[in-house]
Image (cartoon, rainbow, N blue to C red; front, side, top):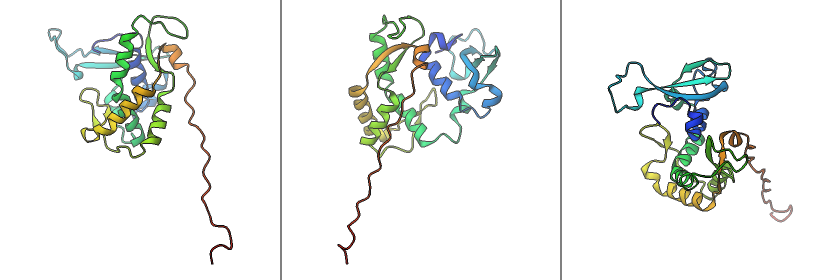
Amino acid sequence: IGVCPSLKQEHPEAYIYFHELLQRHPDAQRKKVAMIVDISFKRFAKVSRNRRTLSVGDYQMRVQTSDGDEDSISWVKSMRREDHSVEKKLTSAMRHAIETHIRRFRSSNRNTACVDCGVMSTLTVNHINHFEGLCYYFLKLHPHHPVEFAKATITAQDVFSKKDAAYRKSWEDYHKKEANLQILCLVCNQGRPEWQCPVERQEKRWKPKEGIWK
């Protein structure tokens, strides 16, 4: 991403990802993460202006909140929260695995406006059939999922490890076959109703009728 004055405007999908990630910050209340309205990346003042190539550590993330304040924040601390459950790690790995599908769809729809309101700014790729729903039904088919994950080199995002390449491939194939994608602007994307997990009837355990067994 590099230096970016407005993640919301220039990289709306990255904005959604980091906005959700920062909700897990260990000092969330003081940092007012619930009030975030935009995120930016700036070069640390200590980094020489003569350096052409910058590393991840040369950038500072800053958040703008709805009360007009701006503050620096560490996304690494959000990643390192110990309460990051297996479920959340698995969801992160599943999102990372389909990034190629998302990029290809975005590339082939560069001139497409938001399908809901018609604007051409802050566009994102969205699942018509919710991503959460796709994960839910895939996991019903493949319930024996990984419980240990690797870390992406740059973002430290939880990803599938090499030993789970077969499981990752099954998920990628399932997503490629079942996912229905569309272009939405950030406002319409965030305004979509959340996916509702279906309520399944619990099957009654079979019991022999009284008097059969003696």
